[in-house]
Each structure stands twice: as C-alpha cells, then as structure tokens.
Image 1 (cartoon, rainbow, N blue to C red):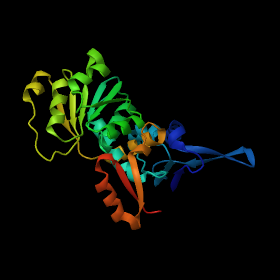
Image 2: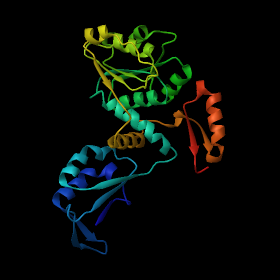
Image 3: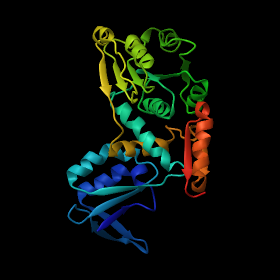
Image 4: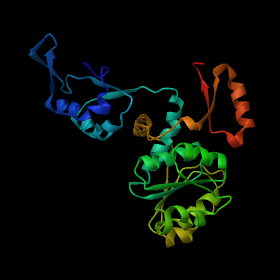
Length: 287
C-alpha cells in the first residue's frame, strides 16, 4: 500500500506529530462521512505500508522526526512544491550543509567572508539556525546590498574597513565565535583566523584556486577548530526546502535575470558583461 500524506492538507508542515502517533499505534481510524457513528480502521504497520509519500511545501517540522520513522521501519519520499526557484535549491543545500558543519549556532556571533551567492546563502542559513548576529563581508558594495535585501542586516566592505576594525561596531567586545570562509582567497581566511574568539570554529566553504598560507600561530594561540565542507547530502536538500518554504531563506534578490532556453548563449554573454553586478542567472525551460 502507498500511503499519501497528504494531498488534502500539508501533514509534514502541520500534523507531523499526529502522523507519528498513528504510525506508532499501527493504524488510523476513519469515519464514514455519511454515517459518523460508523468507524473503520486502516492498518499502517511497516509490513502493510510499502511507502509513505509526503506532499508538502514545508518539510522542516517533520525533519527531526525522520530518525524515528527510520527506526520504525518505514520507507518514504518527499514531493515538494517549489515555485520559480527550483534551480536555486542546489546552492541553498550548500549553505545548509556548510552551516551544519559548525555545530550549534544558537546565540553565536558569525562572520561570513564572501557575499557571492553561496556566501549569501550561508549567512541566511546561519541566521535561520539561530545565530545571534551575522556579519557578511566582501569587497563589492553590490553584493553587500544584495545581502541586506535578503535580510542579512550587518555588512562590511573590507576593501574600505578591515575586519578587525569593522567587526567591533557589530559585535562589540563579544567578538565572533564562528567564521565561514566563502571567498577563496588568502586575504579572506587569514583575518578570520586572527580575529575569531578563542575556541572558535572556522569553516572553509570556498574552493581555493591557490593554496593559502595559513597562520599556524593563530590556529594554536586561539585554539581554533578548522573544518572543511564539500557540497551537500540528501538531508541538506530537505533542510533547504524547509527553510525556503518557511520564509527564513530568501531567494528572489539572488536571481539577477532569467533567459529562455533558446537564449542560453545570450545568458552567458550577459554574465560576461555584468560580472561585477551579477549573482545568479537562470535558464528557464518554461519561457
């Protein structure tokens, strides 16, 4: 039996605990709509249910319960409803995975170095995961303005003000406990290591074209944890869709323009002409 949960209402978003209660019980009561006094039961044991199909626009509330679903022996798939921004789920999953590599961000101050598409999404996911304040840095005022449009209020142009100086206006004496390197240059990661609080974590997200010279002095002196991250896993897609659906992660300002498939060559020329003021360009197969 295929269990549809559900096309009539969004069970993963609003009634996940009710569903788990029914699965634990092994059955669900169903009333006859023409005779409410008449009730039947449908078996929901793992032996009876071949697969659960979750229809949802927001899987986030159900995600913490998936381990129990696995332990109970159920198989399941998610069908998401995404409007206009399906192509942005992949980079969003990068942000979801990168922020998970830093552990619990609740109440922590965070610096994201690099405000391109991935850096922007890392900053948004850090806020969604409970960071107290997030400062995003770049050398482009355009990218920093885009970050503000996405809800990342604290920005710093490090071409004008060094991180060590500019972060004081945001964090005061508290400093920051977590840094994400998303620029991929030595001049980005070294200030993060120098300025992070003792015991802090630096997550390297970017792919470096040239190996940087890291400061072993600050790595040891500040007792830093240096972590890497690469792409994403299945659960990061689920997290990305959930946070986007909930409104905690904003995608619209990241899409600079859209082109029909027949205009793909013009799309690449557009990117080449507008490198300094271009985030994401989407090839829309439905145009």
